[in-house]
Length: 518
Image (cartoon, helix red, strand yellow):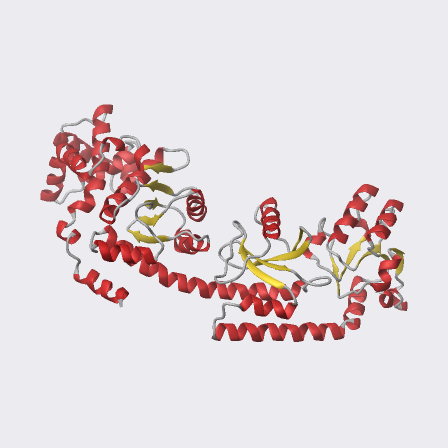
């Protein structure tokens, strides 16, 4: 720094932090007039700031200075423009106390000239950085060709520190097979992210229990941080950390491809389980490999929500160590898992507040999975009337009166039997019209729009429904009966497909069973 200050044509003036300036090294010089520039700076950097953006009060100047010193930058250079406030004596004293040099530059000297002088002086250091960068990418290239479980360990050796990739919401390791960083640093990093509402600055400086660290964002679908800790001296170069963060994103994508393969196998398994196509012994073996025990699992059904979120949900659940199977059938996304607060939070965050989420009773046994899936769908449809758009099967209005499919089938036959037969014989859509009409709160126009028919067509169909069922859609009791019967029909739908399929595996299921067993 002294060489920079003594460069004649720059006419710089050191006004505070003389002792620190004797040993300070300037690795880089950057301009910033942000209110909190330390969020984007690291050790060895010189901050160049226009004087007019300097806080005017002594307290604010001292606080600003101490925040800069906290990230161990080389010094503060102030461009003395005509509107620069007085640099208070308290500020000078604080600079001397914390060892942060304050330098002033004449208004006529551009920051570009100062930055060039720093660059020229650090030409050797820049070559060293390029060499290190090249070594980093050699490690990364080898790891892409031959995946290594100790990738972060190898990269950390190049930077003489330890590295970890963590989930920015839970602090869990985001890359499989990597060691966990100090819990105190993780806690502080997560707190910093929460305080910024998920927005990560250029670098987050950490210090807890005598351990220093630095975190940068990893560009990934999930909120992710690269955490460096256990470093020597001033710590790793932020630019090099950004390179590694980009590489981490590549390895997370590779990991995501492996998990996508697992998801597809899981989806096929869950499809066969929901159709009752697999024998119990084989089912338990496959579920155990996926970390799932039916004694504690439930089925979650999701209707609507973010399509992209549905595609990435398996990554979010896997990263948090939540064993699961996922499959989408028609409009419904099904998940077989052990629900807890974290799992439901991940589902809601991924799929959005508009998604309807239903939760079945405990599965308990493999043969109950088809029924549990219908319970979850039933609950999801009932969730439309709940404030948080979430419903548990046992709590859903009217659903608790029907505890098995036998009772549900009786209700369907008694209330809707004639209507179902009419639809079958005349290839009509009265059942669909009735369901849509009730979901649209008995609005003629909304129903017509949903069905893409004329309003008068809806009126005619509703009149026929009333005639066939013997129930009036203006009577609350009749509406309740019809609504319950519609939902009961959903519960029994899986049983009405083909009972033989639940006893004997189909050819496709047998072929798949042989493939995964082999």
